[in-house]
Length: 292
Image 1 (spheres, rainbow, N blue to C red):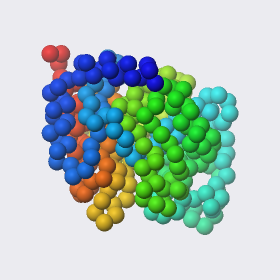
Image 2: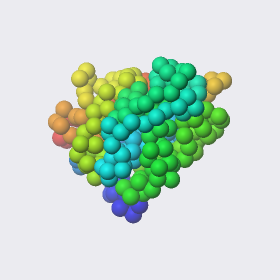
Image 3: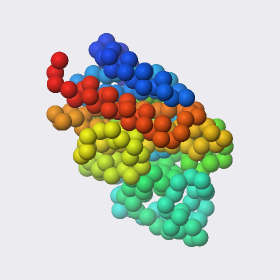
Image 4: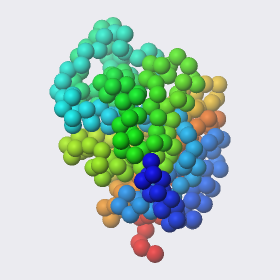
């Protein structure tokens, strides 16, 4: 915790005022709460807006869960080809997103750990996420792993199944934008996982099919983005979480960890997605320009 705090204190000294002001200007269009962290992985330069506030992660929490499960494979406690039995009761109920449930609604099945990781990260499958959470040792084990990585602003408390029972439960799975950006940096730098596990997870994040209009929305075609989105249901006009967190590759080969969390918004989905895209583009324009 001390190391991470000192890192962000040092980064704040160099925080680009112009970019933060632009992020704040963009966020004013949101009818909700907005938290942002943009961090240049290679240099530590950063721009932060409400970065120490807690936001419900929704499916962004699949990233720390997947990392914890892959850590178990690195320790030899799990194998990527190891088969995992999923019974009918293991399939998350609607409205939680789960292609596994849609394809196998009446019976159980067996999937490898590799397949569960891909379903969770690429397709944001809730059934796969809950299976990985169990394999990783549950929320307590995931949180302990985060603390081993010196990441203290991320808490995994519940399963996808539990989140379907009450809209308020999702607030128990929370993250601070600066902590999520820090986790992305740890992942990229190879301090969290073995080289093969890191490469596999980043590949899945690049293949992510959700949220094409968020971080990716206004970036130049062909920009490499490895990310994970999170979205709650909209109930009576209120969307409790619209999130995206990922690593964006700049033209010069450097990388920006971009995290945008929007909570408790009454805006339309297109507006929320567009806000995330605008903030990501602002970070791209600022850090991707020629040295000043």
